[in-house]
Amino acid sequence: MSENKKITHSIRCPWCFLKDIDATLQYDPADGSCYCRKCCYTAKDRETAMAELETLSKMRYKNYY
Image (cartoon, rainbow, N blue to C red):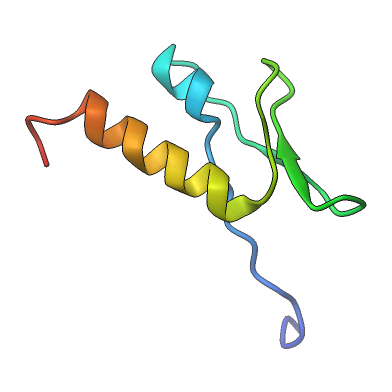
């Protein structure tokens, strides 16, 4: 059963998002940081990465928002 499983959402890499590459961030539980395997992007925590992705998506698709 999946009663005690914690749901983790995947986050796209902000830098790869600008280049139209679909890459998700990997989470490192040892130090709590997120990193991308395709580029050199790193973030301190998941909230920082989500905030950067949100600002970049609003910048890129500003006519739609």
